[in-house]
Image 1 (cartoon, helix red, strand yellow):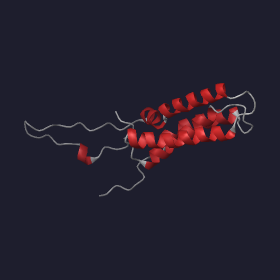
Image 2 (image 1 turned 180 degrees about the vertical axis):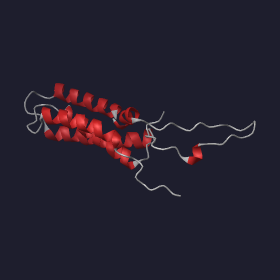
Image 3 (image 1 turned 90 degrees about the vertical axis):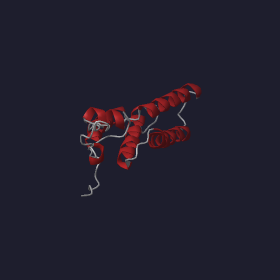
Image 4 (image 1 turned 120 degrees about the horizontal axis):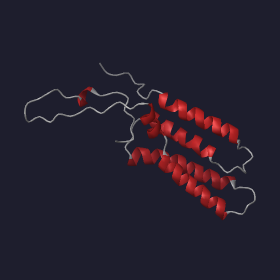
Length: 147
């Protein structure tokens, strides 16, 4: 199972019954809500981000958090999400890549150090729940299919 969300079965993947030596291919199943949700959340990159934030929290003095370092780690997470999915996992749908980057941003905000003045745990929780509920319902096949 790859990380690309399957929204429809291409006609080329469905094969008719052939002769005795033909290889019968089974069409991939269309992903449901929970499968799409699992494929949209970049758990590997969120894990790396969380580890980096933990290292920063233990390494810096307990004064005000350094916004520049936080932003560097955050931007690294955005780029890592995109390139990890695009290059390593071969996700080619740009909307899915964008939704995964958005999921990373929402998750990153929800686990940001609480010392930042612009952080609000209530808003972070509400945003996390709303994005996680809505994102898998966004149709990924917006292009019109050739006839």
